Structure formats: structure tokens, C-alpha cells
Image 1 (cartoon, helix red, strand yellow):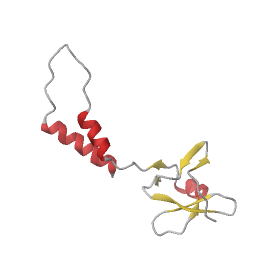
Image 2: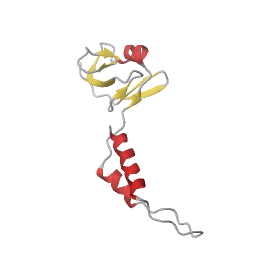
Image 3: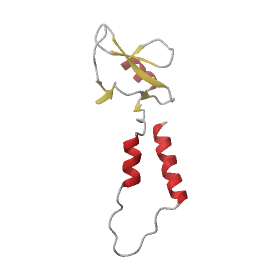
Image 4: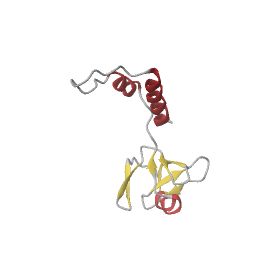
Length: 111
């Protein structure tokens, strides 16, 4: 049975089924869109067979949601953000190294 679910309560936490969930071993689990006969979401990691969410959670949980990709708007907001007004001293603009570190962090966030 295919059903439209966006979250599922498990151990007092709502698991976001719209995002890939990463288990403690680094496996990436996605909601297949199907459910068990009792309505529990079926999750799949790679080419493995789908498993009920509670079984996956008990075996390799807890989960963390996979980071969302950095969008153009995210990068633009960071690069154009106004620094806090500080009238006590002059601040130099960010160095190329600082800028490179920022871009590296944004790229890691998207992977």
C-alpha cells in the first residue's frame, strides 16, 4: 500500500520521512513510499530490501537527518550578510583564506 506520509513518531521523536536519514553506521535510509499492513513506513538503504522503520531504528538507530544541499540563496545570504555594527574599531574585510574556509564549510554541509 502506498500512502503519503511526511513524518512518523518513534521513541518520542518525529522522524522526517521527506529527508534521507543517516544511521549510526553512516547508512542512508529513505522512505520507499510504501507501508506495512499496519501502516508503518518501509525504509530502504541502497539495494537492500525495505524494512519497517521501527526495525531499522532498533538495529542501527538513532537517525540524524541528512543535511540539505546548500542552495544559491543560502550562499548569497552568507556572502551578502551585513556584519554587526561595531563602532569601537575598524575591521578589515575577510581575507581570501577566511573566504575559502567559509566556502569549504558550505560545501561540507551540502555533502
